[in-house]
Amino acid sequence: MTAPLRVPLRALDPDLPLPAYAYAGDAGVDLRSTRDDVLQPFERRLVPCGVALALPRGYAGFVLPRSGLAAKHGVSLVNAPGLIDSDYRGEICAVLVNLDPREPFAIKRGDRIAQLVIMPVPPVSFEATADLPDTERGFGGFGSSGMGF
View 1 (cartoon, one colour):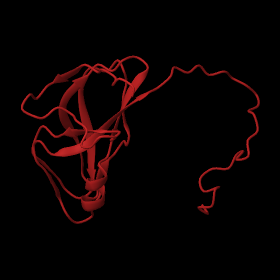
View 2 (spheres, one colour; view 1 turned 90 degrees about the vertical axis):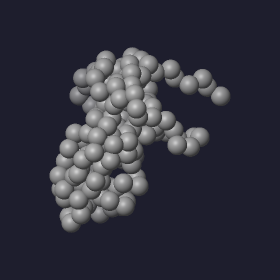
View 3 (spheres, one colour; view 1 turned 180 degrees about the horizontal axis):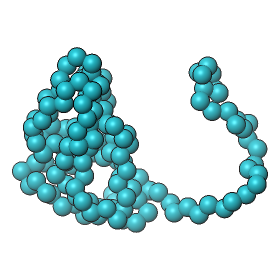
């Protein structure tokens, strides 16, 4: 088993639990709201999560929606996934949106509102070229595998 990546974390709201995995084998840790709020239908809001990170260079954080909130309440993230660069040191926030056309969504302080996944991201250098190597897929996109767009 590989040793876990050590990521320094600053608790900006020490009364809330630190981000943690719900189950062994989970890819994402839960992020919690630092405040009570209500999202009206189709309303979006930047919701602070009470933590700041020092991600190592070569890694990025991705803030993702929680599937249960999406399925049960129509709550998602406007910018899914939200990207956290390794040199960002500010508070992690989630840009929540209530996509339910009728029901407001109440957020309570401490609610799990998003997930954070940390992944390696190698540095890339782009090399301009006139041609790209051929592949079986070629130029096919947006339904080319059978979705019929």
